[in-house]
Length: 447
Image 1 (cartoon, rainbow, N blue to C red):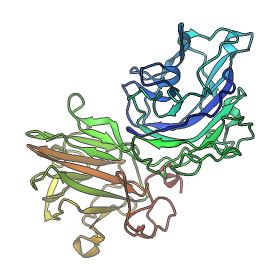
Image 2: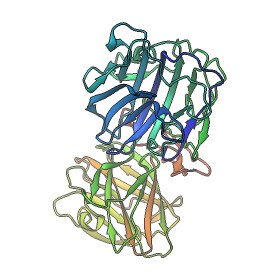
Image 3: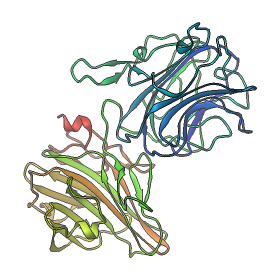
Image 4: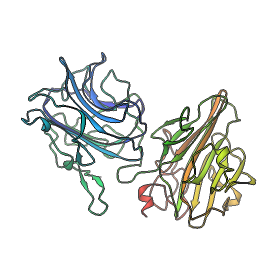
């Protein structure tokens, strides 16, 4: 969401003691404090909130006139940027048993281990469902004062007014896979201020029987094909070079990777999903931002057992199996320079068709395949597991940016201009996907 959020001003104050919020989310950035939802005015008055703390624990709280009127902080941390989490907060402060007043569920299981466990007092009125023009509810931030925006993806947000529900009302366990899955049409009573948003797209339009639409603020919501039932690959901020220090900037759900400006900056990262066997397709748009033409971009695949490093190092690594392409220079295969120059330019879109059954890789530039449409290499070791590489280069006054489309249909926030054909039916791409190839996603891995 970056600086984008959803907000609403309720017409009337309704039930401030019984309510539920259910949200599916996927984190893109860890190690910082960010809001999931909450209320609060421009003066910093929190109200009720749910957030990830800087140590990646989950924190719920309510701040009123007398200070903190309830706070729960988990011992558990949430650091998986490839996983969708289903988080449900069910509230009923009229409960006589304190532990029943605020219940937090993650992927169907109630959280019971807390470093801070201060339940609100019995009958406590909370700040959710209040009608106010200055501290109405927000999703992706904690009210009007907050700039600690959530970074990542959200889906299927159910806002319940008047009832404390459990996670099982919004999800269930798949009998075959054992995975926690979405109930896309939950049998719940939404109440006066209730709503169901982000159900089938990037819209705050209420899909419940109510018409409680939410407003997008601070930017634009970008639709993603990635979902809890089909997780698409992204770039992995937990696998970068250098491991410490400046290792680039991730954005748009970790599909965009920026090198810093400097003299020089060589960075690298791998993908969240790896492959062994099968036929895979993805696209990358390359831009040199800040002017100039000298900065390069390293793309390709590398053996999963290899330590991540900049492409200048990885392309000649001894003992590993890689295919590394310097977009301004040569193609390197298994540590050797092929002597073949497939030159691209800033603004180009490249497509990669990787066949790990036959051991081949084809690369196209704006839809036209290099090497007369033949594979640029047929020497890939099919016994290995591979990750996808991104290694942009930065220099004084300019830097490379890699915008990946793993099948979400966007390069950053820009949608593909006209989607190509896709025989696998998984993902949206700018150019035609070769027959038999598919997007790198959990559903694609199970074809």
